[in-house]
Image 1 (cartoon, rainbow, N blue to C red):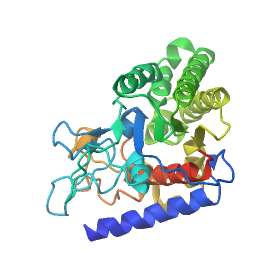
Image 2: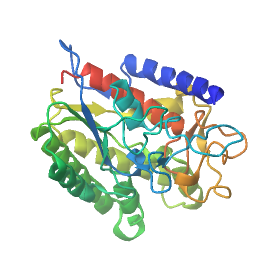
Image 3: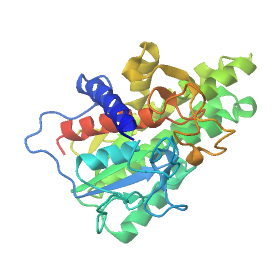
Length: 326
């Protein structure tokens, strides 16, 4: 377990340095008084989900899960945290789906509204569910990461609809996302919204390019990602006071171009072995492909970030939250 923690700290440090030099986030300005939220709320898809349906307060991630040790397969959700957990911990906040420490928090203020498989059209219902519980306040740090499933769904229709139509569809989804982000901000929450990862860099895209010869499918997925992200960015009111923008897509492009960028030594292959863990929430440090690492491989499966990728995103989120004049 100590080895895992050491690796985690090294990866987190690398990502923090990248964020600090301004490569991967935008918006904000000089801050007079540091923003200190008393609650964090995560909206989006599976990339922000802690699933505690199997073990209460010890949720599984749609990434690479940590185990108690190299011989004990029991999960420890506090290790190899999601990006939302990295951000929450910076402010001493906890999600009830991962509240299994030696001294559990009595009433965790973190809320996860994100749902596995969610698309942008599902975001409104997530927001409604939160507002039904309690209204947003200026002390809420809200995270939003959604849209990857929209782009993949439109890509699946490319052969039928053609590029012009699927581009139009992902642009419409990007506008819808930006509108919902503005809705949260107007209701009082302080929002960190991340661009979706460049899906043209994923193992899925690489595989698609190798079996289709009509058009470079990886380049197509990059174009769809870019149009989605651009539409979202053009729609949000990004004045820095209420909304902070995290440029995950640009960060990953840098990581892939630079040898050992961000501490990742493998940006092409998946880390999780599906013969040992058929579904992503079952993937742990004990079910990885030979030679793969939870922090050194960029991708957990064909489209989802590894633990190292998640933690890098968390560091970008911290940098943006601290630099925005919330």
